[in-house]
Length: 116
Picture 1 (cartoon, rainbow, N blue to C red):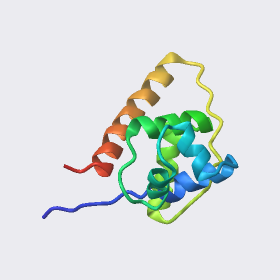
Picture 2: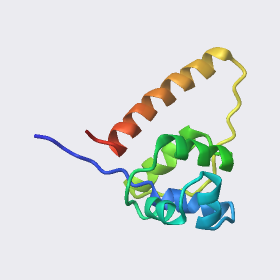
Picture 3: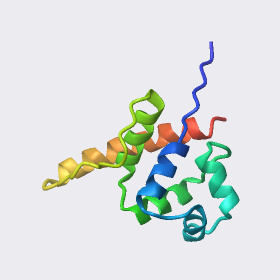
């Protein structure tokens, strides 16, 4: 049996944009796409390229791990909007462990967003 799962990013993208007090056009201009294309992503239509997503998150100052958590919460029905934890890393081993976890989550997220 094959189980497919659709991860919806739209509501989280919209919440991030509204939190930053930006219009869809302003966000589209920031990441070099049309307003219509960006609007589709907020409505969970089409696939947002990872490079565009990462550009947005960088602009918002939102760590990818926090975005992934917000998306997970949204998709499980327990939305908590934009209260990213203050993470402090004083030890390089902690940073490496977080990066390894983040890398795995990116792979899973990409597989869910772009199933082949």
